[in-house]
Length: 295
Image (cartoon, one colour):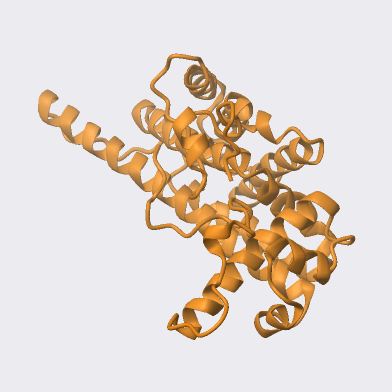
């Protein structure tokens, strides 16, 4: 599962004060729009890292500017308040994250459709459209595994963003909770091809329960400082998400396959957030090679 090269960097993935990102002083031919974009991106990185380290409530605008290498006047040219800056960074980061999740979802769906068509041609039989059939159940479980793997790998690759986006968003107040709820609703799209649910169970509510439960587990791990362990949750979350829709047997098989992804020596390639090259080289999100910072 590879990173989309054209994606913007995830906030917190880079050091805002990296000399290579500095805006040269004095007369410059750099367009003002480019200068503003550079300042905004550095503020995103500085804000996310500052909030992750000190907490939203304890992170001041001065702290954020210092971490970003940007002046207070420049900060207020971009944002009207700390809350506005945090929500902008949150929405930008979650858009990048969801672009990666949708890509994983679409790639998995395309692979499954191609395999189904190839199998149908070999067997001279039409492809079954029954989404409750064994083949479709396994296919949805496989797609779910791919999406969850990317989610866990990317969050673990940028601990500062994971902390700010999953834990500290609650400290922002009502506006933060609204943004978080919007994010959780976005996950519902991945359940569109899920098998049918019993008539006794309200499908939208069931999906909401599953999403909330998985999110709560992420919150607990991140709040406890266990961000690097997130990829290890893959088999458990796969079983938890798949079982209510595809049944315990399909979920157990999917969880077993997911566990195989985590074994050393498998072909599973960890996905990492854009601009985290050291982790991409090691193939282990959240675990850079010795001597590499991953910034």
